[in-house]
Length: 179
Image (cartoon, rainbow, N blue to C red; front, top):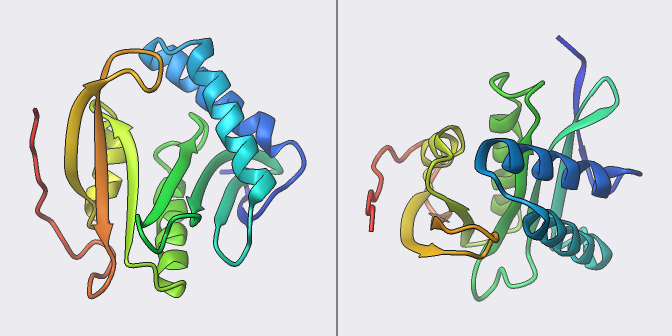
């Protein structure tokens, strides 16, 4: 196995690489196209330009120097809405190696240290491996609606983790509202 490092913050080329990982994965497995990829690029670029290391977190997983995964905590509205978990992806090369769990644990621990009361994320139905990781860490499905925010109609989902008094993986129950 490759030497895997998790690094916090911007590294040269990361914007393009994280967009590429999202674009290729979501096109191959879900048929998403240019709309989705350009939205990831614009949103990630906007986030990185306003990145504040005191409020926000951004980590990349690199295998032998090549970025193969990422996760971010957008803390811009953490006080009122919660910290927003975004751009969580692991390449096919590292999928199933535990790197995704390491990235997610890193992001949650960062939020605990910042004393954020909750973390939320938006995803869609069908990403079983990611959902398993979220639920293992205590995230609950709190909302599900049909929508097109990614350019294709999917069952959009919102997951929420209330942080105070909850340790990672301590909640096994889920809200399983399928509509």
